[in-house]
Length: 157
Image (cartoon, rainbow, N blue to C red; front, side):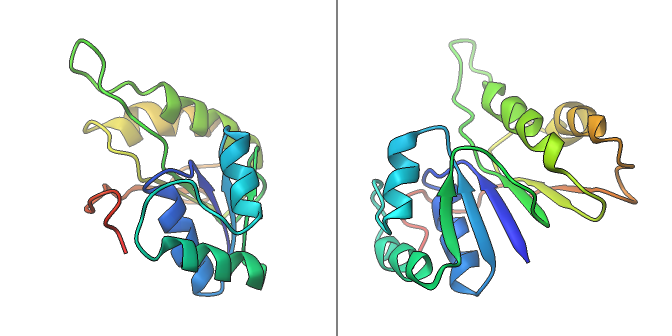
């Protein structure tokens, strides 16, 4: 299975490394060239116990690599930041941008999972209307879900 993880921060990178450590072909996507470059060298720039070993092993095995743009995959995991605004609401710009960015790569049978911390209704009200532009029927040709974080960043492994 090929998995495309959008966002290589404290949630996305450990998620990508864990899937890659189990033999899945994983491409981690981030807009930050420094993060992508470090990943492709088998290095990390965040603090997480044991993550460096997972990443180095997966990159060496060829199951994990970084990219600046998404590519076709079987599953897409959106793990981008949702910072809190001055109005005390989640800023969904990064989630929206990630959904728009993966839409051209979606194919029949794909799975899209929102991992980012998000308000109730984000999948139905924000993600689904955007990825519907793929022309695929959500629920029968394209599958969408939400997997809220249940971890403490920096202490995942």
